[in-house]
Structures are given as C-alpha cells and as structure tokens.
Image (cartoon, rainbow over all chains, first blue to last red; front, side, top):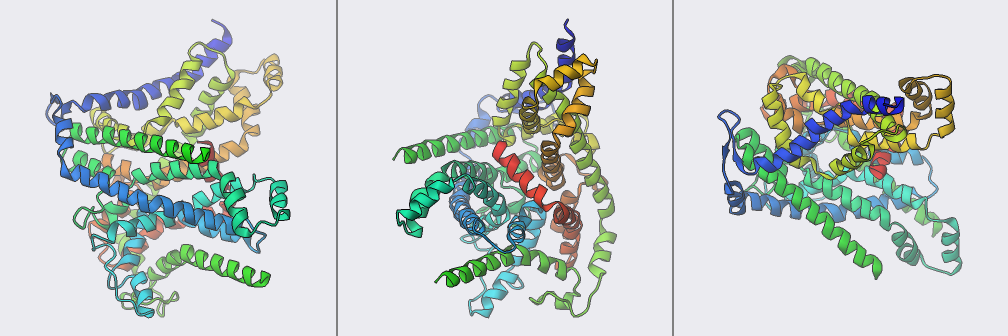
Amino acid sequence: MRAEERSGWLMATPYTAFLAAFALYPIAFAVVLVFLQWDLVTPPSFAGLDNMRLLAGDGRFWRAVANMFVFLSIHIPLQIVTALALALALNRPLVLRAFWRAAFFLPVVISGAVVAILWSNLYATDVGLINRVLARVGIAPVPWLTDPRTALPAIAVMVTWKNVGFYVIIYLAGLQYIPRSCQEAIEIEGATAWQRFRYLTLPSLLPQTILVLTLSTINGFQLFIEPYVMTGGGPLRRTYSLVLYLYTNAFSYQKMGYAATIGVALALIIGAVIFIQRRVVGTAEAL
Amino acid sequence: MRTLGRVALYLGLALAAITFIYPFLWMASTTLKPPSEVGTLALWPDHITFDNYRTMWARAPFGRALFNSALVATTITLAVLVFGSMTAYAMARLHFRGRPWLNAVTMAVLLVPGQLTLIPLYTLIVQLGWIDTYAALIVPFLFNATAILMLRQFFLQIPQSLLDSARMDGMGELRILFTIFWPLSRPVLAIVAIVTFMGSWNEVLWPLLVVREQHLMTLPQLLTVFVLGGGAGSIGVSLASAMVLVVPIVVAYAFLQRYFIESMAGAGIKG
C-alpha cells in the first residue's frame, strides 16, 4: 500500500467509525424504531404500522404540528423584517458601530434556558417588567403566557429577539457585496430611498433572505426549551412544540417507537417545508 | 431633513439596543435586590444583598455543574479541533480509496435533521449503559461534520507546493498538519472553536435526556431542573442561578466580541 493511502486511512478511520456508530446507525435505527414498540426495559416488540396509525389519529401530535406552523408564520416574517431593518441601520456610517452590533448580538450568545427563564419573568402577569411598562402608559396587564391566544405569539417574539443579531450579521455581509457603482448609478437616476430599497437592495439580498428563511425554519422546528421552561406546553397545549412532544413520549412515557415516529415525521415535515419555500422563492425570483 | 434623519436613526438604534441589553441588566440587578425591591423597574438596588447567590449555591450543586459544563465543552472543543483537523486533512489532501465516498456521506449526514436521530441516539446511549456518565455527554460530539467540512474547505486552499516540500524534507502527515497547516488556519480554527464551545455550553435537550444524576448535570440543565422544580422559590434566586451560566459567556464575549460575531455568522453562512 502506498504511504499516502495508509496515512489517509489511518487519519480517516476514527471518523469513519464515529460516523457509522453515531450518525448512520441512528438514521437507520430511526426507521426500524418506527415499526417497534419499546419501553427500554422489556425487549422491543414488532408493532407493524401501529405507530403510524397512532400518529395519524393523535390529536396532540396534530396540535403540535399546527402550533409549529403558527409559530413559524409569526417568527419568520418578524425575523426577516427586524433583521433587515437593523442591518440597514447598521450599514450606514455610524458612531459606535461596533457597540450597536455587539448589543444586537448579545442575546445570541446567551443560553436558550437562561433567556426562557428571564423572559418568564418579563412576561409575568402581575410582576412582569413588560406589564409594568404597559401600566405606565395605561394599558391593563396582559396574561402573556397564560392566555391561549397570546402564549405562542409571545414565545415567537422572544425567539425572534434572541436570534435577530445572528441574522443581522448575515444581512450585513450581503449589504457589503452590493457594488458601489450600482448604488451610485441608481442615485444618479434620481431614485427615491424607497425605490433604491425596492429595486436594488432587496433583490440583491435575495441569497441572504433565502438563507435566513432556511435557517430560521430549521431553528424554529427545534423549539423546545422555551415552552419546556415557560409554559410546559400549555395553556391548552397551545405552546406544545413537536420536539417537546417527542421528548415527552421518550422521557416521560418511555415510548421509544412512537417518539422515533414523531422524529421521522418531523424530519419529513422540515424537508417538505424547506422544499416548498425554495420553490416559492424560485418562482418569486423569476417574476 | 438630513439631521432629522440622523436623529431618528440614532433614536431607533438606541431603542433597539435598550431592548437587547436592558433585560440582562434588569436580571443582573434583580439578583442583587432583597425580595421587597424585586418589583421595581429601577436598575440600582437600594440595598445590595448577595443572599440570592448564597441561597442558590447552597440549594443545588452549581459549582459542580460549572465544572461539568467546562469539562464537557472543553473536551468536545479540543476533540473537534484535533480529530476534526486530522479527518479534514485526510479528506482534503490525501488520496485514498473511499475518500469521495466519505465526503459524500459527510454532506448527506448534514442534511438529516437532528430530531430524526435524537431518539435512536438516546436508545444507543441507554444500551451502552452510558446514562449518567460523562461519556454520554461527550462521545456523540467528538466529531462534527460541519466543522470537518469547514476545515476541509480551508485546507483545500493551502498550496500543494508547501505540502510537497514538507514531504521532501521527510515530514510525516501529522507533523505537516500540525506544524504547517494549523498555523495557516488560525481564522477557521477560531471559528470552529467558538461555535463548538458555545454550542456545547448552551446545549440543554441532550443532557436532559441522558443525565438524571444531579452531580453530573451541566449548567443549563441544572438551572432548568432547579428553576422548574421550584427549588429557587423566588425570582431573585432563579435569576441568580441563571447568572452562573451567563457571566462566563458574557465575559468571554466582552473580550472576544468580534470573533464571536464573525465566527457564528461565518459558520451560518458556510454551514
């Protein structure tokens, strides 16, 4: 064997073994688990299509699916608009530019568990900071996390707040790629600020918008610690996320087959949503 | 009009900055307030007290959790850097049979959402008997496909002539990697280190699944369990325990702010 061939294999073998054990095996076993019933104590038994049948008729699962779509339909547009607005503001010549950027990015580095605990207190009905500020302007306290209508939007706003700094940086990078000559040309043409934004900036940022769309969709489907800490999935299961439901089935009910089925369904949903988003964006681009 | 625009811009920025910073300042100040003052919007407590910190430190093993988190995050980060570099080096610069296959599988694995493998991975840990061990927290993260692809991308750009002359001098592949490639790859190594460390430090779902023994819990997990279990008993105490998790990251962020921002955005753009 050539020396290079040998070193190549020596250096790649640990990773290959790791890949087999902790990536490929779990992927394959996920598919097997879908057909099993297993509580981790007694030996697994073959369950045929039971898990899939259960899933199809499980109101709690579909409630969680609906919750995810409500969550994403608030979170994603809000995320794109706020990130774009802050990036446009930061893209001007500014005093203390690094400070502003660092401030917007601060929540991104903080653990989701901390943010959830902090915001439970900010959203608290009687003593929460937000209601206290609202009281100053004469607005009655809102039961943010205990009203089924406001709980999920409240969490969506919080997640947007936590992640926006990350997406601001992505948009800022995109803004730097818009050629000066294009900006000057459109200004000489006498375009208004809105026209410049609509016909130059926004189309130029399409790759970044697609990236923000995809990443915030993937991140959104991972929603777990926020409802786990803030609401326990309530009120009326309106904040139950799919990952929280998956976790509950595995950890609290010891239903490995069913939890894995939820995992597979979730992966398929994510794939489908991203596929559809790409299609829609592709069509919009062609217009 | 122009001045008016500038004023509006800075007002907007200031408002946004307050929205992002004020909650954390409020949190920090609340932990120093006696219960009677917690209700106020004021940032500066009338009477500073460390009781909240004393209480939380006495009620749950936060010192141990700090150690666990540091141990787990440091081990994973070092492994991802060292083993990841070795793998990426082989995948970028060494010709061996199976290399295209390995590259393809690595990319494919990245497309699979983590939620799909979460339960099978958990059952694997149970069957290995790793529940309530450091192994459960560390081993599944010793390699990271994203990190390997980022490093590989960077290693591909290093000129072949450097490699050839090092080999002529009789240097082995590992020595070439660590004495020639590594010094040239500092930016990408910093990105991988920060993203990996942050990811591990803040992770909470996986520890919640595989660790039940309080003394093996990582910080975010112990914090979650402590606050949800009612162990805190008051806002001041629960926020004080959250501070243990926040302070190290914010201190690191204050010093390495630029690297944090560039790393995380860089990883997002490339990954």
